[in-house]
Image 1: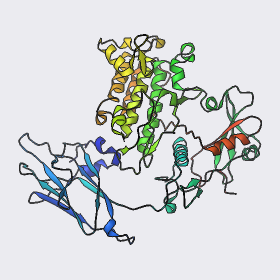
Image 2: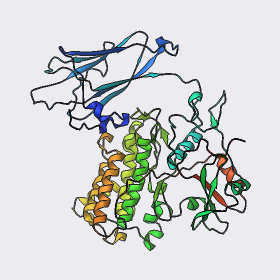
Image 3: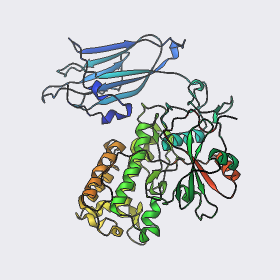
Amino acid sequence: TTANVDVSKASSFDAPPVVLRSAATPVNGTRLEFSWSPDTSQNNDSSSAAYLLLLYFAELQQLPGNVLRRFDILVDGASWNGSRSYTPKYLSAEVVEQVVVQGSGQHTVSLVATPDAILPPILNAFEIYSLRQMTELATNNGDAKAMMGIRTTYMLKKNWMGDPCAPKAFAWNGLNCSYSSSGPAWITALQFSYKELKLITANFKEEIGRGGFGAVFLGYLENGSPVAVKIRSKTSSQGDREFLSEGGDLEDRLRGEVSVATPLSWHRRLKIALDSAHGLEYLHKSCQPPLIHRDVKTKNILLSADLDAKISDFGLTKVFADEFMTHITTQPAGTLGYLDPEYYNTSRLSEKSDVYSFGVVLLELITGQSPAVAITDTESIHIAQWVRQKLSEGNIESIADSKMGREYDVNSVWKVTELALQCKEQPSRERPTMTDVVAELKECLELEVSRGMGNYNSVTSGTSNLSATSTDSHNDAQANDLKQQSVLELGQVGDASPTHIGPAPR
């Protein structure tokens, strides 16, 4: 077909839409089959071989009501999904996934039409992955999270996928890993003394920026990679967190003292929402494997001096084992008020859990309220419940933050409110993806800009907005080594394509 096939339900697997626009059916008959044999190229024991099998389906014909296409999926003669038969959806791709087949010999997948089916089975695409047991332990969790944050923050265009140090033969290019037979691998940390930073910057020669914290200097590592060295002067009154986020965090800007003195306009709130959404979309779609933040909240959205937003605090971040997984089972963690009820009740974590939390953030941006809204001196309700109660009266101004002074496009506020509530839908499959959220927020920002009150002439596609944080003791040691009570941040600039992170090993 030449029609567009909706791949949103199969988006986690990045199936090319052009592939899903075609399909195979049996020429004559009601049975479609294909087979494969165990992988023996690496001298694997085929008796213990395991495979991940992915089948893609999308109906390409608009069928009359009395014409049915329905079939059973069999693997080696056994029903794949119990007694349930499958019917593809018209121009909507779905993937049947995460079935591992074990055993020796040839394996066969059969699609068999049910007795009431008029049309034969259909198959748009399939993938088979051979799963291999790792002999090395995974990288230390803290180190792995820190490297994920570095990759995301600086948008490093390296082929960094999977675990940073394991398997050893596929360790990330440019990393120095320390391996132990009794524990996880560690990433060798490079600590810079104040003397080394003077050398990197040629004695802080070229100043390329300045803010309330102090100055930023251009420098070069031993391999020629350009870096920016950010210094907090000893006379600065800012702490380390403020040094890294001059505009504070979003929670303070919405409900702290500064929110009254310099309230955020609706245009600025939309820009912050879009920046943050871009960051989460990058985690979910651009990172390989995908990352789930698990603690999205206004406190973890840091603002620069220009009020550009960055997602921060990756302490609870979960990494999917590979980019083909749609969820993992893990002990629920997060912040009350932002925690996805479905994840809390089932322990099944997916990107839609972050979407739920971001919906709460959107409601906070609209209303200025906290996740728990006080309705009496002794009783509070969740912000979503409070918003729904208010909206039942049909007046959007009853929920809009009064600090905005009614300076906003009403349609824009309505659209963001509807989007926020969609992000909290149950079950989670009814929620939009972060890609959908980004697209909706762009439209809402355009509405506000067209009202004539915005300071921006266009909406840009944006980049990932993430700020990596780490509690690794190596960072504390580095900070203690700095002289003159200064705090320095070393950041990659330019095209971010050096071979090594930090100076060459010494």
